[in-house]
Image (cartoon, rainbow, N blue to C red; front, top):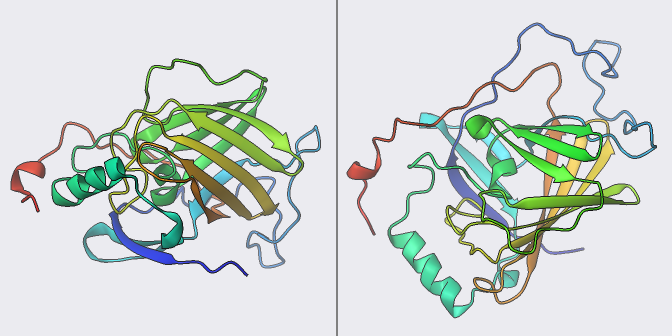
Length: 253
């Protein structure tokens, strides 16, 4: 058994809005009409697991006061070793950094941790819609390689391929802004992430993240996050623009 460490963090987030009184077609159901989340994994025409659906992290706990939600991630602290540059950056972030206050986009894997997201497998591409900031991501499945000298972006450039029942996604080309995870966890433009998506059954998805950033971390480290299908609803807008009024009131250190 792998010994894990649960990191409890406070993040500001909103609950996914409901599309009321709607029963989505194609959902296996129990005799009482509730979705059967333990039903077999659905399949695409090519026989691969179909990842379609709206997913919410199991690590988001009960909503608290003032929009605060407790997020727990199974990260082993002994695996997360900062370089000297990483220690300086982490210290700066702890002293004078207010993630989310400027309403900037957020990077992986924090994006999947704090808000619902919807996966669309399409021809040659897997598209992920994120409720946070109403944004998207494309994972290209057509055999292309990652760009050699990319223009840095918030969510990087992603290519994917199937390894048996698991979708393996390789992403690089990030900028060095915002945090990689809640808790002011830093990253640089050398960040490289490998994700392994596995849909265990109809209602449960797991993603294993491998974090490799030689500027900030002395060695790669990883953790696995669990997600549950959120049926009979849809994503709604989540916008955080032109309304930043917090930073002038925040005190450094």
